[in-house]
Image (cartoon, rainbow, N blue to C red; front, side, top):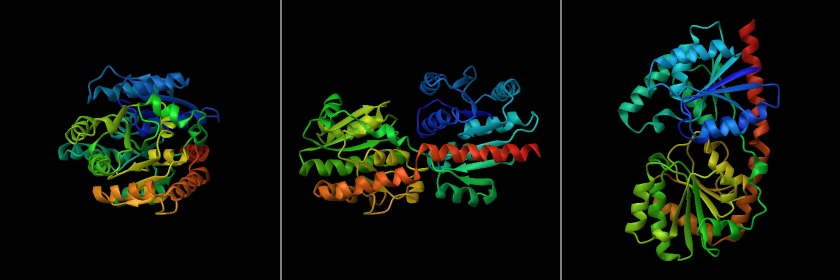
Amino acid sequence: MKILHAIGGGEFGGAEQHILELLEILSRHAVDPVVVCFYNSTFAEELRKRNIRVIVLDTYGRFDFRLVKGLTRVFQEEKPELIHSHGVKANFFCRLAARSLPRVPIVTTIHSVLRYDYPNPLAYFLASRMELWTRKWNDHYIAISNSIKQSLESDGVKSQDITLIHHGIPIEEFKTEDAPEEIRRSLGLPADAFVIGTVSRLVAVKGLTDLMQAFILLAEEHPRVHWLVIGDGPEKGPLENMAKEAGISDRVHFAGFRQDVPRCLHAMDLFISPSYSEGLGLSLLEAMAAKKPVISTMVGGIADFLVDYLNGLVIPTKNPEEIKQNIVILMEDEDLRMKLAEAGYRTVKEEYTLTHMAMKTKELYRQLIRANTK
């Protein structure tokens, strides 16, 4: 099957990582993938490293209707059996471009709830209009969590046009032979610190300001506690300023965007996600795959797999005091940390592997292509 994936690709987040991992497996199982993206950035380079063919349409402006012609030309040359789009911009332009072609099914993966991706009201209005106006030309949707499936249904998408396929984790990559002390040293962390960690885009919806407020309270009472922040984004400056004003800059370690996240996770004693919205909560599953105890808000797709005091601890959104209290609970109870870590690992191993995700996706491709040829 020749499958064409399309995504903006200007940043490297969960959707981009998902495509890389999905296509690495599918390319070994009778799928010929090609990816179209609109920026020649980290994502495009990572595709090339994995010998996945990528076409970059980066000669157009940020929102340039000439992209329709550019995509139409690519579709005509590549002749895919199915088009798989990701993200508002790619969805919009792919659906318009495909209208002029012989019938090709279009499937869209919905990675997140739109209203949380665009905090600016005008930006959200425009993005939602782009998405909703072109849905009539889309054939099928992949929802990565039950909450996203329900959101689509509430928007009027028929249940039979949605397939639930959870993202998978390359669980074997989250083991390491390196000693935690050596990993900490490479990240500038004291060997004897108690390290809480996050892996996230540094944007407002991730709730990291709440965690900083909690950490400031925690740091006053627990001198061994450090926070490792992996990721980048517009909230980095404000978070750094909060740490500086509280006099704890030496206890908060901004590691930036990293390509060795599985290794970095082993520098942590616990992982925390104070997010207000998640499509699935991929970083949380990755921490569980690394056998780290997790604390998280119960938002979006996280409700599909997290059970309080079974495989993690659940905290309310926007509540720094509760965040602090739950961190202290795990700091003081090593047995509970070990119990949650082992249960979290089992959750990932039994239900959230890459192979399971890839084979369900491949079967959906087969069904849609078969239905299109009847």
